[in-house]
Length: 482
Ligand SMILES: [Zn+2]
Image (cartoon, rainbow, N blue to C red):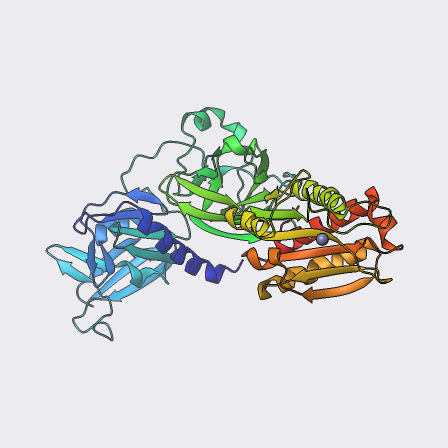
């Protein structure tokens, strides 16, 4: 991931997330959050032309910068961690009317935070919906000036790196970076106050599952980037300026926990420098959404399911075509369709329905209507062919134009699996295909009138290979990874 685009992702993410927060009163007091934690201020922050200003003493307390007002040279000099930022207080400062410059309100100077972003490598975001200023410092804020009592917990900066770290880590840990290892040297303080690090980092305290949501417990708004990968399916969540709770690491730089959620097989997590990476190994591709809250990150999964209707042609009083050996097409259709349904039922996220599972008669239009009522994603009608000529092979029919892709895909796979002649994909207005209002195909799985095809078609091997080919098609068509 490129660091340069990280802030953009973060900012866009925050805009997505923050409107979900309770609608704040426009007049509500302005809150300040530094690295995800609410900070106390001595002077009410000012918002002018959407630009947040903090008083000089609040900058000292919460940003950790030293502020010197030099009235003689009309300058404010700010120093932080060896960096200096100089702002002009002159009346004509700023090259444009919208440019933010310091101003004096009574005895207090107010300083536009945005003016410090580059010099102090920090990011500032004003969220009018929640009346909150979010400041993210690339390094930990020092609380020494803030007067805030910070519990005496071991800082991750204090712990020695362990080069023999776990192989479970997803990204190689940098041995020069501080790690959370060796925390067992401080067992007492860890158990007492586990989640307040001394430098404002986000602490990843634990994971919990509920219904379709994975919750990652944090101690403040986390800076999160995320993306999905396939082959195998997984979701990667990177949390900047964060540290894993010692409870999760057992002295290692990461770990793995099993999932109790059907869509996820396991969660791997690791500390890499100042960031925590989570990898969710998925059992299947799932749609997901991520929401950051004051004390958690919720990842919601919407398991995608696909309804496939398998229609064994004919049945009951309608035997279909007679086969060479005196059997009926309807029985071939039901047997093969049952094999297909069983193969599809094993695919995660696929729900299969048969229009008939017994030797029943169903009207042609009703077969498509069954699929319509089920809001099916795919309709597959199964048939054996017949003709008064020595013809052999497989034909795949479609009607709706949108069905052509799946018809081509399934045809190629079943021809290969069958070993019979390729008699092409064809378009025809079979009643079942015109009725069903979703992508659909009608498979003519060989000629029961053919001395070549017919003996093969009744075999278990043939019907199972067709079923496997249809299952492959469904997985590919719906992009289901197993
Ligand atoms: Zn038929």
